[in-house]
Figure 1 (cartoon, rainbow, N blue to C red):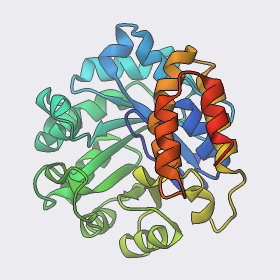
Figure 2: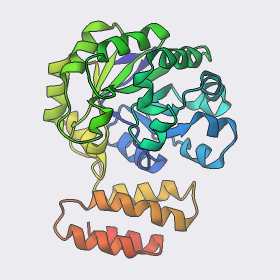
Figure 3: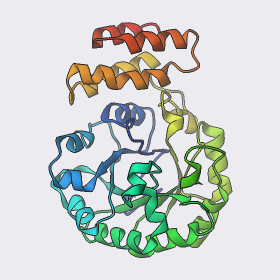
Figure 4: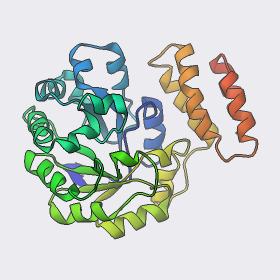
Length: 304
């Protein structure tokens, strides 16, 4: 898959707020992710020099194709964020038009833009005017998928180089089964690459999504949590590292950015996924939740 001259080999790690930190992106990259996206960052937060926002944009040498995701609904701030020097290192900048969280939607951002295609178009045009390569991630609609293809066509016409579509409406949040039909119709309506997202958890589901929709690629979100190895398996390869090695690397990279106490707290939610489905997984998760130091976390990882 080629997006604006950028070649992406392998499934994409979709942006996930609270989870696609630099450590997780590095591990997923080494496991075969062709491109990885940061957690979504506020365009206004970046312009107002928020340190927290800049920390979310930390990246490592392991990322094959580094991509940032920003959110907002003000064309001025979107353009300014895209022009920020910190964005120089990212091959692609994605505009979030899919986040279903109420506080984001109430601000007219994220998936709220699905209800305002004219504003969404203005946001993309502003981003494109920065000279960066711009993509969009959206859902099939706000409450209905009926206008998905039309919305994606407008994003293409505004200058987006690719669109990733999560096969659920905003009203579905993460319930039910991802609907591939609107993605298929969007693929047929546009000339730019469309990436299918939603319920992709293994090689079989990835191949099915590609075959059914005709999409140029697939993006894995929640299916990668605790399972960065999914990228290797989608490619038909064996994972290059163990769970313990993945956790150790994940921790070590986060320590490059944050103080120990924050890394310990942040890793607890990851541990819940890394241990899911394991024998004694619940016991190991509870031990991780009680950990007070990196040393304790790494000792727990020895048993994985």
